[in-house]
Length: 603
Image: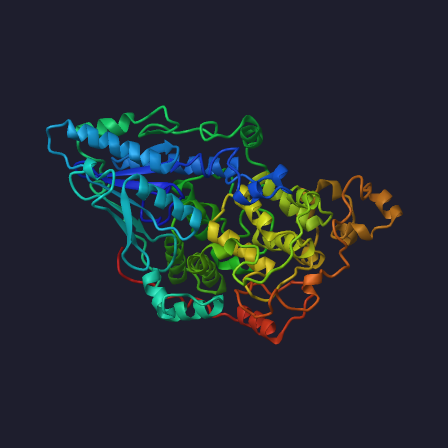
């Protein structure tokens, strides 16, 4: 992961470390420009969908790629200060690792110092198919066979008949280590006989009652982080590069162009101002553990904002209405356990209330999504989600284009989409509303929204992103929540400051019409200088018409399965709210505070 200290137990998709060559650890980060990075690397859904191919989404947009480049550079700096280093590569991970293994083996074979050439490859355990396929490719390329050892750790040892076995003097292995969650699944999963429930609340209650949040690992010593000792091996890794599309060395750091981004993509995030002044992320933000830890210090301790988080979290303007930890969590720049531990320290030293509880609560949601994805596999990417219920989705490129570009005629949605496009960030409140419009009101395949978020969000996390979208579309079995966008806008942007910030063409529209400009008469439009259809679009769908999917007042299958959303306030659902839904809303408002248990042992 792009972090060198105990503050992280996370990783990005392409992070490995290799132990061998006479002892020591060689940290490696590989930018896979054949599967993830680059202007031409598109999502499978877009590539397979002829109706949306003109707007095929990239797997990773240039803004997030730049953020990850910054994170990796920061990781290298931190490791080098410890006397270690970071090999950074570009290419297919399996090819880069094979080339390193071959060079190390051939160099050691020619040496006389008796160096062992066993390579132990370690990376974080993944739960989704695309990431798992990379691990499989690495095992196959290195001649390793995966051997699961327990619920959370897989290892691979070289088989007796693999093609590469003769390169090694002793057994090599491939090992995956669980990370990125508050709780160790070896502790939580046995509570549910190995498979978590399909609703969040039972999971939360049982985990909160029976489990302890783990301690962040101790900062590794310089000796533990030492690079391989062999002079020959060290020379190899310092100079590793090649002409087969793979680059890798201890001093190489790619640019966006090296990753395959074209000039248009690069200019889109480097032309002044590099950071939009309206951006809600912390001032001067950049990727990396160094900034991540400074943000935790600033938000929790310096500004003392943790005590009011619950009351401010639904804001939409500025950097301090919420923690803004998400981009660094998603990239592996800091650990959720570190954040939870800081919340616990805050409770001991300053205040213990619903806000301190809620930050940890939302970290637990991340745990749940990852374990849910582990349980259901590729079903979380199906149009029918985990329910298997068939629903006919519309694919209308013109409407999808309007949604992506913030031109739907619904000011709150348009403002949020424009913020996303300009900054790579959107508030949680905004995400729920833009999802509701696309998947429910427009009935457009929810996966097209999920993959657009995958391209554009700085804080993209595969499980959290896709399951939030699946929940919003009603394909995890829960009650379908349609957001009344006008009511939401009036509730959370009463004076219209957010809408006017991102939709300046509406700045002179009176407050009473700002959130539903289609209700103005021609005279009123002339008075404020806005004509619908010329200066701002008409609503893309009739706001007064209830979508067909909502007519029965239930979710897709009405079974009540799937996690409910926490926020009950200000939701304008036109569906029937069952007594179970009311009870849930009451439970969310009356949750206990500060009831998390922490492991008190040292890391």
